[in-house]
Structures are given as C-alpha cells and as structure tokens.
Length: 358
Image (cartoon, rainbow, N blue to C red):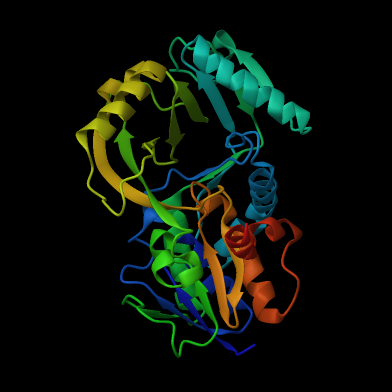
C-alpha cells in the first residue's frame, strides 16, 4: 500500500484515522473545510455507552460498540501522551423512566441485556434519585457502571493537535472527486454518500438539536452520572462536563441537510429535561445548535474497502465518538494489509451489494 493516505473528513472518525495512520509512518492529507469543528462531532454529547444504546435486533452494533469501548482507555492514554487530554470520564450511566410506559421500555432493555449476559442493575425511582441528586420523580431506572463519556470538544482539539504534531497536512476544502487521490478513507459523515456511488443511497443525514447549559449561582450542580431518560416515549440525555456544563440532547428526525435549529426541537428538549431534572429551568442556556448524524440503513456503520484504494469509514449514526478507536484501527490494518478487528466484519460495505442482489 502506498505510504501516502488521503482522508476525506475532519470529524472524530477522520481525525482518529489520520492520527493513527501518521503514527505508523504514513504521510496523511486531510480534506475538510473546518477540521475538528465543522461537523456533527463538535456537537455530540460524548456518551461512550454501547450497553444503554442497545436494542433487540442490533446485536452487531452492541458487539462493535463494546469492542471499541474496550479500546478507549488506551486510545485516550496514547492521545494524552501526544500532549492533549481528551477528557475521558468513567462516571457511568443511569437510565431513568418518567412514567409507567417508559418504565416498560426499560424493562424490555434490561431483559434483553440480561439475555446477552450483560451486567445491568435495575433501580427503583428512589434509588435512581439517590445515585443522581437533582433527578425528579421518576418511575425507575437502570445503572450501567461500565459506560464512559468523553468531552467531545477536548477530544477533537486533542486529535487535531496530535495530527499536526505527526505531520498531517490539512487542506481546508471540499473533495468533489476521488480521482488522483491514491489510497483514500471516506469519513465525511452525512456527506459521504456524495463521494461514492455505492454509498449514495446508503448514508443519509439525520438531524438533531443539542443544548449546552451551565448552572448559575444557587443552582444544584448537574448529576455526577450521565443520565439517559425516556420521557413519554422520547429519549433524551444529560451529560455532565468537568467544567460544570451540562450537555442536553438530542432530537432525532429526517430533515435532509437542513441544519437550522427549530423552536419545536428546543422546546421538546427543555420540557423533557425539566421533567427529569427540575432544577435545570434555572440554568443558563449557553449554546443551541443542530447537527447531522450520518445514518445507515441498519444502524451499523460502513467500515471496509469499497474498491481498490477506497476505504469507507462512515454511517456511525449516534456512535461516532464511541466507535472511533476501532474504526481507526481498521483503517490502519487495511493500510498494512492485515486483518481488521473481528467485530468490524459485520460493518463491511459488502452488505450493500448483497442488499442490491436481494
């Protein structure tokens, strides 16, 4: 494989792949108009939570997410050794249910996880409130102590700086054609479908609003855990940051490439959050934004070779930050002509060809 590598996309997947490849001695060029800051990664909540994202029928997603989670501590440590702390936190996740119907949803999740041999602790409403002070009147919950979280903006800054130190070249422009680029990794998130015919109808944008809040003087601080919640059937999450901020997300709906923040989306998030964390109404609202996740047709990303010299690393949906280490390791294995991590097999883009033949 040529020692040169082109990466299209400067979000968490593209930067992780570029950094890992540069560490192996490849000369890497990244194309992105706003590397580290222009895509969905900059607006992410930062949950590294494959277990609480799990759902029946998505076993391959869970397996791949868990494998990447196992790689995260070493990934963060090596990144810190390059000179920047990515803000990895091991505070775990609490999932809570607002009403009885939401509690039924959590019962299904708990039974499913137990059937797979995963460790999950069911909580009463009182137990959930004791673990996460400030949480209001919830019907019950789950505690998943093994989940991690990362400060997405610290992570992106750390990856960008590590790439620069390793000699990665950044071209702040969009790629319209792959001609002449040599070995190339397609990691342009929701826009990747425009770069290869096999991905054209396979990767689509999925819009989501996200808010960042900060407690004012006299307010209760955010809970010490990531809190995921079902509120009248709608999922929300609240992720505490080390600097005291709280990330609240995220709506999810089809809107093409529209990135405008809607009043409806903000209202839904704030109303849901108030029911779970009543004190949030006194927090300062410091940021409102919308981003586009890269969704696939089956919740699995596309990670693997598309053709001679073209490698897909896209379609990670809600799990881009979580799956960055295992995806980057798959890219490095491809460059070295080595087998990728076993769990990547289910994410092969070859399944798109099989779908076309059906």
